Length: 231
Ligand code: PEP
Image (cartoon, rainbow, N blue to C red):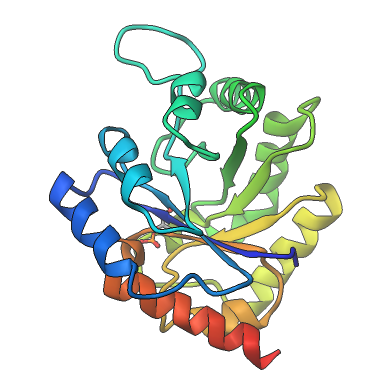
């Protein structure tokens, strides 16, 4: 476990200027607890506004970036410029090639931001084979300074979370290969979080649906705070 517990909210292709304003105004009612670092990743057009309105203690992340500079692409220097500290790379929904993921990691690192690289399987039975392949292709000769988010694709948005045995196997595997902050993502919310947190396998969570409404997000932060205090 790291000094702070990270909670990264991925808004995916959701949101509007009004939603950013409302969300940021509502989350002001909850002081960020010591030991928790909440980070929000809205769609690109809302990064700037979110940076302006998020309360103290929050970080800003982007959902992806491109390593090349063709028309319409968003690059790491732009993300740095609008205040991002982290960039999600290789999210399961994006289906990028190994090469694209590697280039994105390097471009994010080149700007002094932290890449959070998503790994995870479609079929739980193939988990270690898939992770082996992804880690081999993504991280060979990549300097330290990236984080990894284990997101089983079948758990994203499905309401299902892996059982403790599966998660222990995965985190032990990843920890003996990589010495990094490890995040878990896939249907994390205030009702599923307790076993995930008490297993003490993770340095943070990547959260989709439960990051969209301020009330769900704050309920999750409260639960994490309570669990951390219980330790
Ligand atoms: C995600 O999209 O990265 C995610 C984890 O979504 P959800 O929490 O909705 O499963």
